[in-house]
Amino acid sequence: MRAFTGEGEVATYIPELRRAAPDALGCALYTKNGICIGFGDKERMFTLQSVSKVVALALAVMDSGEDEVFGKVGMEPTGGPFYSMARLELMNRSKPLNPMINAGALTVTSMIGGRTATDKLERLLRFVRELTGNEQLTYDRAVAASELETADHNRALAYFLKGEGVINSDVEPLLDVYTKQCALSMTCCDLARIGFVFGHEGRSPETGEQIVPVPVARMVKTFMVTCGMYNESGELAIKAGIPAKSGVSGAILGSVPDGMGIGIYSPPLNEKGNSLAGVELLKRLSRHFHLSIF
Image (cartoon, rainbow, N blue to C red; front, side):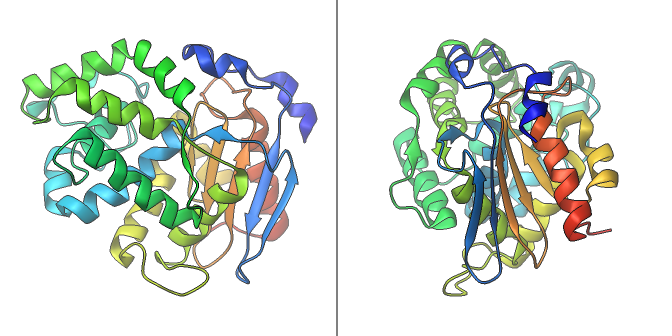
């Protein structure tokens, strides 16, 4: 699969992401017996970027309730770019169409529990450490700083949403949390374990403890199918049939209901903004192991 890495382009609009190794390719499968099987650059650390949106969504619904979250964010896919403001200006109440585009993700992050930005970040870190089983997990400070310095599009979205009453918190502290959320750093195995937890109705693979309520875990997987892969979501649903979420770092999270969790990392992206080798690998894994949920 590594040959596919030469066909994509590493994201450059966040300066720190340019440093990624263009030939990197790692994959991990977290299986029902609690074993993580890794391949390639499985130990390489990477940031989640937009993959973090599924984690933030689950946490915001747990903290603020489904009615509060979806009173401000919609549930429908969008054909526009993930950073677009155009749809907000055309819609009543400027309600973002779904939690996977940046406007929706910023709104969701604002509803994570905590009085201050520090409280929200600590809440998020505790949750993602529980999902991964990795108490050392944190965010990449260099990537977070790089994102904050180049956050003009997200800053514009946040101020627009605040002006429309969709976001109630102060914009700059929110952006600080959001950029650190996107800069959460982990390995393929950590990512695969998150996929396993969501795929198994929110339960810990070791203890069976309910980390995420069952309805929330199901909701997250549904958004992954309909909106998780940008404008490639429909095609991937047909060709792979695995709930998945991508990020511009080259990360892909896969979550097979009652099956394996999948973590993939390969930085070169296709024209849709998804990991080119990662998407192809996900399709082949699905065909080989008959993973499609459809």
